[in-house]
Length: 145
Image (cartoon, rainbow, N blue to C red; front, side, top):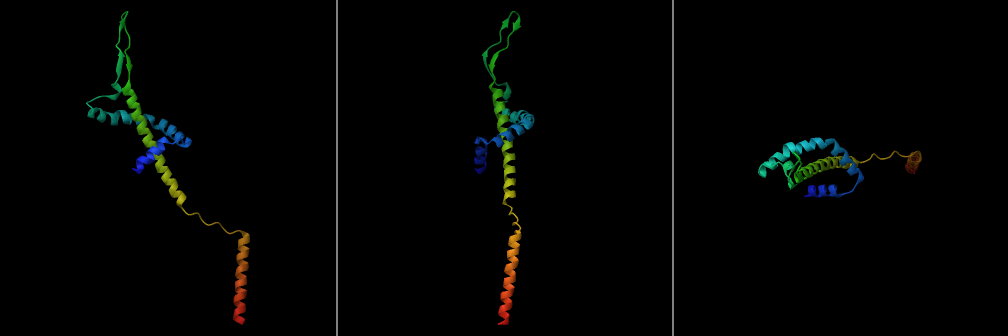
């Protein structure tokens, strides 16, 4: 459930960097993902719903007419193309989410490494030497008593 919550948070936030990553990666892999959806994912889904090719789904508003021996094109609402585009978007968004999630986990691991303690300043080194000398003098004075 955390995975779905993370995905929802990612998809709904308006971070400019995340949006830029989405645009760049979406553009670069758009053709690959479109082919994945159209050629690999959609045929089995079409088979499950009765052999329907989603890109062929349309509502015809006006049938073609023949005017002066020329046939006009039908007027259609191609909702199948819209469905195909929505599937493409969801898969692209999911892939980008996975990449960003992996990168953010990697960055968290780098941040959790403890930083090396800073080197002491020259003043601190001098004060440390003075402290050590005073301890030696006190120890030597106590041995004489």
